[in-house]
Picture (cartoon, rainbow, N blue to C red):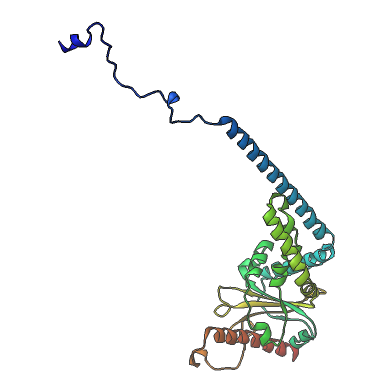
Length: 294
């Protein structure tokens, strides 16, 4: 009966309430696509211009770096490259040396080295067979007391490999792929090194002799080391010895005077390292002296 009353003539038909369509909703403003499109276009132009300027700056920096590298630094580059090649050749040859008998050049005295400048390097034997491993090991070299115990003051060859890196071809090999920030850092490094380190590097490249210590194990104090000294002008070997800390010269049977280290009071790490390095140096002195006396 209720249904009939709802459909009586003359009365409006009841329709269920529905929300208005979204596209006709008065509380949702229409998107201003015209303005958004214009803003996006402006932003795109700004980014494009910024990218263009960055590429332009990068190109200018590359030209500037290469001009200095190939111009002003050409002569120092050639000298440093020749020095590193010579050292690498001597080091890899030493690593391949299979003999164990000590060698002393005729009339050679360790004290003669004090009259000229020298280079010194100590790296693991396992790192001395090829160029890249030599470079990596040289950059990790820590100071020791072996040269000073011989009363020698050589320049560490680590500087040739680490500080002198800005003179090597690898320094500019990847310029084309570097950003403006990296190029600026590279340019600053090159200019700073050229100003502050060039004289020291060129002096080191003119050294008269080269001493190399190859560690057979992880510690030069627990395993033998191989010591080589060359005349850099002729690349002639001046000395070779395989020695071990505590004064033992292997295969030469020379033992330095001293008491059992176990009977000595405990030393700090630095003091112990210095004592062991001076023990190696003492063995070299005895070897050189004994050969000179023959």
